[in-house]
Length: 496
Image 1: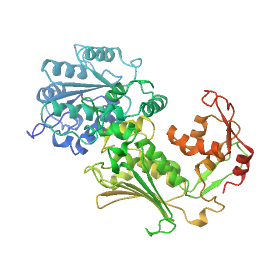
Image 2: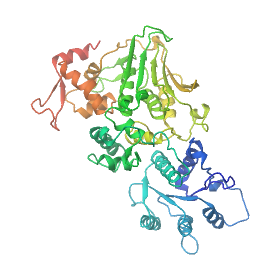
Image 3: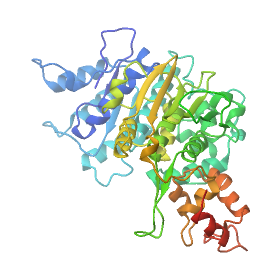
Image 4: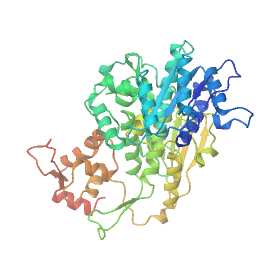
């Protein structure tokens, strides 16, 4: 894959040519670069397989493109590729040509280990590793995030970029001392268990931020502050999320319930999702088939969470507006500052599309912690969840510089015998069966952020005498579990 060199104002990139196993990644990189407001000012991407038929040897064409390129990007997978008479694949020939020509080289290796690789590809990876720093990736989100950071760094080092993108630029006034080691460790623990992320809890702040491309020199970037600061809103006031609940179908004062949530991007998502799920109708089933009574919400939790993650991860943080989550009697609306990138239309959202995050350095950690799923599939999953629940497909629109997601609620007649709004500690009581660990309770509630769970659910339930510890004299024991008290059992039978 190479950028066209006909526009002299643009730099040129050559990305290692056709490998079937990496076709999806090449297409995603093309869409990402062309859809990013910054990168498309400097690069124009062209896929090698899009070349028209020509009376020329393929190897001569791609080696000529390497010669014309400004820099070389190698995507290395498991396959080595077809070999010429010398036993060399196109990928290795391209790498060698870029090396001979003194091109800047960026190498990205797919997969966490080399056990499944063709021996010659493993040898090529070792050869590259002896000459430069490689980055590994497991999926499209971390590939585009790492490529984005590398290309921005290249533009900055060559003097073509004087101002970094918002998420990559240093946050004025913030230092590493303003970040929370506890919040970082919670993230690393989750990323390791959910995605096999290589850095374990206990990794130093500087090392972890460098690995996630969240440092601007030695200073934390805006993305680092939004993800791990003790008090992100001290530096970025409008990063808060405003949640409003109306009993009717219009915005009308007085507002029955109005909350402003603050915290990291992870905490904002959990708090906003909790706000919505605590106010929508739900039905508690019987324990005939399972010791745990199923809870069925009128809005699928996964769809609500996906919409809120989209708003928090992809909003325009340079705007003075905040994300707003508004629950009406007939719908849920989520507004976030910023519009779709030019290469995506509202119609594109209804079918498979490339992931083009506004803030890739925020989006990647959200993916690693499993707040977001496979690139480009989140909105499609949201649509599918709503349809499976018998709801209309979500609607999307742009209004006054805001991107709006709307999830329809069912008519009241479709949700008989629903339970009214309950507090978080009572929601915990409804899912607690027998003796359960903290992790089991969080999973049952669909909560990811440990601190939010402790503060909003666990401690209030303990303070209200609804639950008790199985090992009360050792509250921090690794074997600690929780069970209902007599009061908690009564509350579960009549939660309202």
